[in-house]
Length: 69
Image (cartoon, rainbow, N blue to C red; front, side, top):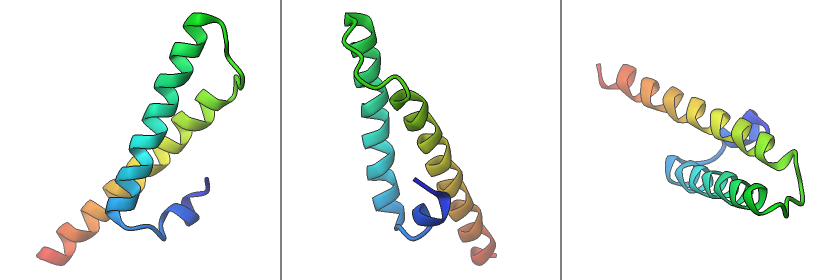
């Protein structure tokens, strides 16, 4: 998912998407341990999405801090 698409979501929606992507990484690790991996690029994509979401959440947090001053 692109960062520009993620910026359209609220903080709650971003937190929900973050949780979903963390679950995807966890599922991938279980699949890798059992040898039933379907999509090897899935974990990489999920980790990148997690980084994007965390970055946007941090940007929102910093913007709120500037507005509070």
